[in-house]
Image 1 (spheres, one colour):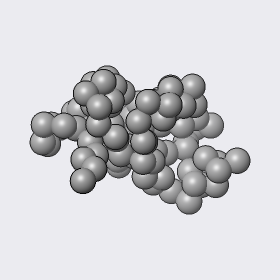
Image 2 (image 1 turned 180 degrees about the vertical axis):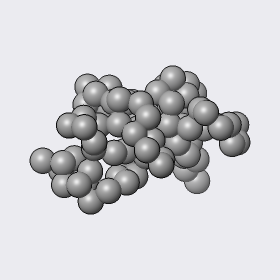
Image 3 (image 1 turned 90 degrees about the vertical axis):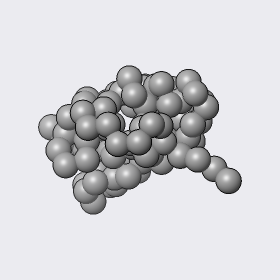
Length: 85
């Protein structure tokens, strides 16, 4: 069985910590694969479920993905199209 940290959370719901980069890094450091909510807005990638909250560089995403499986839930079709370029 594979356990995935949903939005980076490993201890249940924690409002304000979902998709927060430090939360995701803690989950990765603990050995969890992670699911993130990914958006492309304002000509940048962002983390956030309902809106763009935390700017995310491609370098950071690649760093995370080099350590564990990162499942990107692309929140818009534009995000998918941009991510696949």
